[in-house]
Image (tube, rainbow, N blue to C red; front, side, top):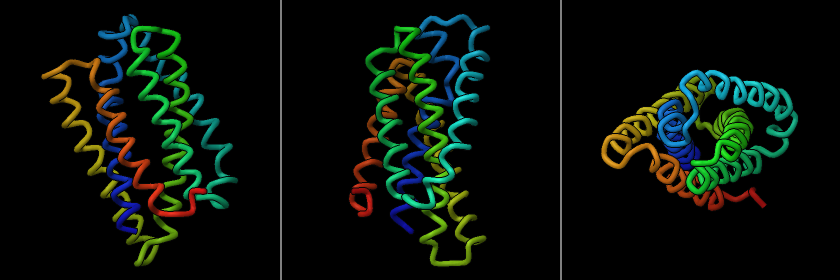
Length: 177
């Protein structure tokens, strides 16, 4: 359970480090117009809703593999954005992949955590939610520092490093292969 909580914190940290600054990243670096940001968010939302509906049948059967799959997709997003941030086509594709990855991860991680909580499910879920939010706070704070010091271009690179750490930790758990 503790290892799952570390993975949860790293995952939300990586995600919020870049996605908190979604508008800045894609307008200032990629060159989308400000009015395009809601459309980009809509694309991600549609993919996310569809994915959440589709993934339910798999997370019960393969909780660790589902988290690993989502993390691998998130790793692809950060690599794609790190290398292709100036291409609008790459960015739109990565937004769709991010929505797919995040929907899988959110559903699978809470399922995985509740399977291993040493307490009742309500207490385990409370700890999970707290750690999830802690990762968000760390990520958005560090993202603000990165944005201020190095610029938005470095946000996906930083998220890539943290996601890599989470993925390595997942593969030390077992049940992935």
